[in-house]
Image (tube, helix red, strand yellow):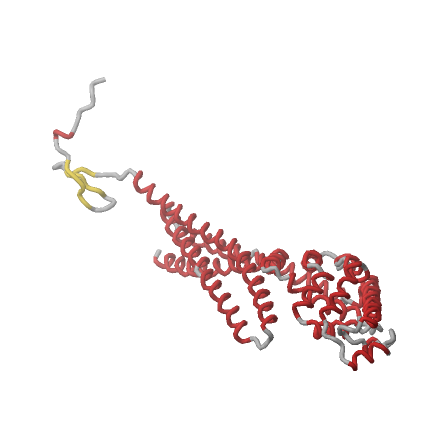
Length: 386
């Protein structure tokens, strides 16, 4: 019997270790393999306002990746340098509105996770709707942006005026970004309009020929899906193994309902406490990590603010997604364990304890091995005659 108790205690210790790990693993899987974690993290910090100034150069760079003739990425960099960050942010948000960008980014995130779940990789044109961007580049919004660029830029130098006077559409690298004299304003406007049209045409080609934007590899797709499915199936063992060990504990050590309640109840309460214990430390670690990111970054203030908001949004969203199932299961284990222990206490109160009476009227309890009272003739009543 003593050997069974020792073996059951060892198994209970294993359960106490494995169950919290299983709870954390399942919660982490549901968190990091969920598209909502990333979508909520980006939306919670209003990061799409900060994405637009970065997204426009990225789209231009992707459109020119196959050696297109346009030098729009060079022109974009020149515009940014000549008009300043604030004016550039305002212009970028007009061409790439945050609400449009959010829809496209969330569509890409959904597509990535659908692909991991077994769906076929769609063409990029089916994921990102570039038509709205193309319309803004070549329509009234584009003209408004061009005028704002010219008004926000510094006055042209004599050298830039000469370059603008000799400018040809075949040499866009020489296009100066500045505030020209009135007689050259239409020249710069026309040049920028032409470049916007070229960029729109290259985006259209990018959408029609997605291989330049997204490389397909059927073997890698299958491996990724296999790994994802295998990992999700292995997660079922996170609960099955501890439950199997609990069954062994019942077999080795439990001989009554009271024994079942004590072993299982105490084990579940400890498991619940250990599952909840790391949550406050994780949140503190997130705050410390963000503070370290701010202090150690050598980027500009604007870039550091963006990095901080991005990290805070994603990490806090992940923590919220992670903590909800952990809290639910942790408190669930504690409540279940407490219920089992309370049932034992309730049963003890209702249990009828057999007593033995000695010849001199003393009551003896075989359960406790003690005398619990005395019976006197006055306390005894004869049942009434029938």
